[in-house]
Image (cartoon, rainbow, N blue to C red; front, side, top):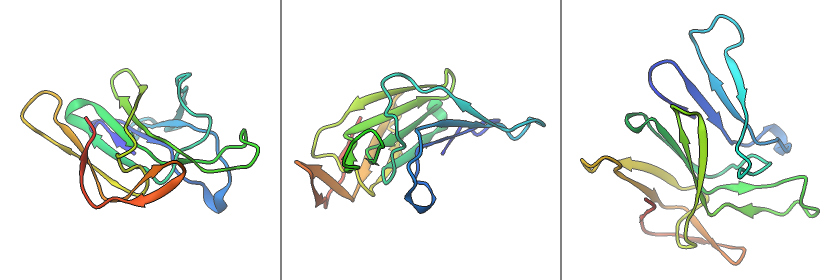
Length: 150
């Protein structure tokens, strides 16, 4: 979940109850609205058709940006329902409500990690992925170090 700390929050990804497959979605929550407070937003064409889970999110209100790193996808569209690991950093622009995706190298932890933002005093700062597992050739391997991803 991401928030601009003013009047909106957004929900992206996540696992469903009983491991049901869910279509990917991006939802906006506006507590000040008296009618339906949740609004479904359209996803860009480059986004997956299923929700990622077990990745890491990070909210950076000062940059009006939210991030989601890695995760696992299971989809109806793959005949075997295999797990597919996301080697992607998704950035959400809170002002334009658009998502962008950036590939990340195989050494970046993408499953059950933590993602934090460090303000470096420059305009953009640094995202750091801590702990977790990285995936290479379909195998998960425990990571014992931090990796900067921006």
